[in-house]
Amino acid sequence: MDHIARNWLELNERVADAARRAGRSPAEVTIVAVTKTRSAEEVSAAIAAGVTDVGENRIQEAADKRALAHGAARWHLIGQCQRNKAGRAVDVFDVVHSVDNNRLADALNRRAAESDRHLEALLQVNTAGAQQQGGVEPAQLPALLAHVADLSHLQISGLMTIAVHSADTDDVRSCFRQLHALAQENRHRSPAGLDVLSMGMSGDFETAIEEGATMIRVGTLLFGERTTDGRPA
Ligand SMILES: *Cc1c(COP(=O)(O)O)cnc(C)c1O
Image (tube, rainbow, N blue to C red):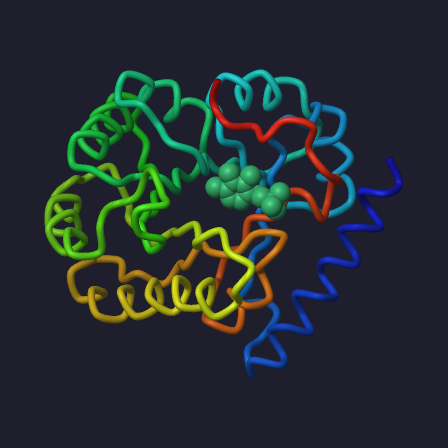
């Protein structure tokens, strides 16, 4: 699995170049290696190569892999979380990127309290309009932030988005720009600020870094093309 170590080095160079071009420090950008559909051996190889953060979109798949993979990493839930799976999510993940409604936030907070944990979470915002499922509408973000500010075991550190799927870079860029602007406009509503911006994937991470991403979620460039899309069946 040498390709994973090679791809990791190459990706780090591209991230550093993009950051410098944007006048930012490469250290401001964390790469979350998206391992959905990949084996526990591939996850172990990635961690051995230097990956510190692993992203999965299905809770059970992540639980199975986390039990088998070697090496320490922070595990991120990047896919939707059903409310009745909140307890499992709290058990398996260090960070949840997909909080987009009050009831899910309440469930995660309650289960984190039961486990005596503080769960780091991001609020997922829909910046892509009708095309997209998941994510709070931008106009509803202040209300969601007001709600989660009172939840003692959920630590909101920032925002997450999935850009519109488009060949037009301007459309993609405007999604990232909107997330950045929303974080700035609303940071006073969040006790811990909204410093984390999780945005950008294999096809658009350089644009995301130019627009302020502090966390990018990259699968294909590290592991190769997926044969399935890794969405819940
Ligand atoms: C699959 C996935 C990614 C990674 O996509 P690539 O194009 O393979 O880099 C990033 N974010 C989310 C939410 C995903 O589901």
